[in-house]
Image (cartoon, rainbow, N blue to C red; front, side, top):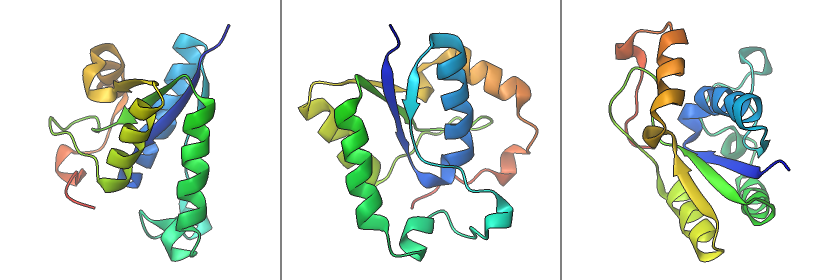
Length: 134
């Protein structure tokens, strides 16, 4: 039986979330809920597209509903090529909500094999990664 997992984390890591979702489905046969990666051609020039389109509250509520349907959350708290971890207030709220519901919480920074594969495939310079504040 497949586990249902919701990916959480800062939208600055949305590309890493897409890869993590792929790996969770490929390697663990999970059903993954998460954020949607928007390509450059969509015109998403911000990490907070939901705010830009004034649907952030709707998306926050939907994300909590995804957590309710899930057995666990997977927090993308870092990016390949950086040693620092980060999550903001929204992610902190999602983690607290998941814990309150008794859901398992895993973090990318605590998954060395997954991070190693991402680092092996990662082609951007470390200096281009900005895990600073939201």
